Image (cartoon, rainbow, N blue to C red; front, side, top):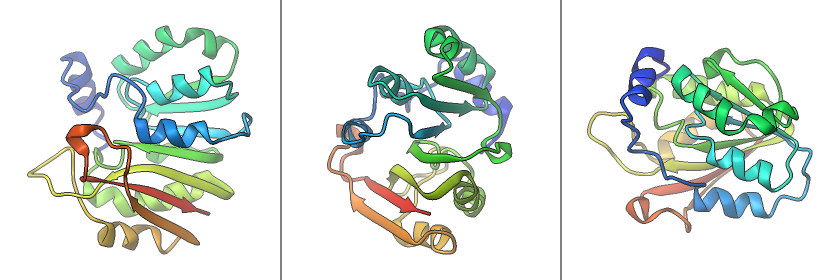
Length: 193
């Protein structure tokens, strides 16, 4: 769902039940093993940008976050202003599907489950377009069903149909570091261009 009014109202009303109040443990483990601090990294549907803030604290130099809700991006611009001023963080208020650039790494954390499922094939295609050769998309996807949405659930068999047309390496593994309420309901995805 890339409905700006919907997500803007969620942020204005403080209806952010998906917010972990910190960096996702599984993504933190992944970040901690990265050694190249000059990777160009994108976090779409960034929420409160905990993962971006953690990357910046670890010395990464090229982090871009994008979200469609102006209330949220205003909060991030205040919270992470020193990094924006140093041009280590690039903050975009806009629609992911209209974004044009290239990245070595894209981190997925509750963006895929927030968009309408009829956009999932477009998500995979656009991820391919945004990644550099050998670039990776990594992160967490729900491996469970939900009534209604967002969040919208799904399963690995479905997800593979979106990524197979574009990516040479696709890996889904049970997430070993999910937060307790999501334990057993998430998979770790790694796809490589």
